[in-house]
Image (cartoon, rainbow, N blue to C red; front, side):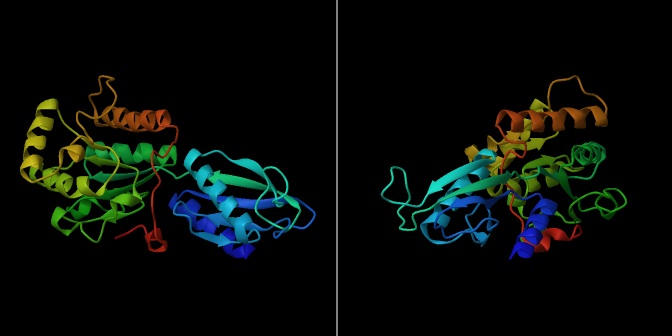
Length: 277
């Protein structure tokens, strides 16, 4: 079981997925879990391993979910005796100390368009140890040569996104394609499926034009409000590298102010380990 947990931890770290691991570090008297017992918990509450079962394990699961939510690791003491104040509903009679380690999700930026700005965004992501994936219907702009560190590379037009791209596996999105029509189509597909903020390269005038076109396509106002355009911090950026710096800095600023580097948990399946699509 320990080997299974070690493998699961490695998979989640590689994919940038958040999780928590609870380890029984001390016991006294009769308890269901022994020192060294471990349980890994995912954000949806599913778990691997055991720390003893029954109500004790459910309390630890709740502590793990709280740790994932807050990003704070801590030791938690449990008294397994219903007769003692604050004790669990248990007849074991002993006590246990459990350390809950929280591992937050790694930011993962979904880049629509493989042009100059998003190429620089990808390079900054690499330097920050963030994940990034790129989408472009031009093979040379979604290639391993151009984006060697991309988690996934999708050579797809907007009408082929469905079933191939999982927006929920990403924490940020950036739209900077080569075609207004395709950028509108990408946004119309993305906004109903993505709960994070969406950066759109361009001016305030372009924002108004895009909002009008997206409204005509039936995108709800609460989803349109997620678009950030112009995107990036106001640093007077001019070159693609400077624009990318302002964009990534704005992502980081928002995430840090929200109290978590990733902004929101990402979801992955084991099949997402392959960096090509």
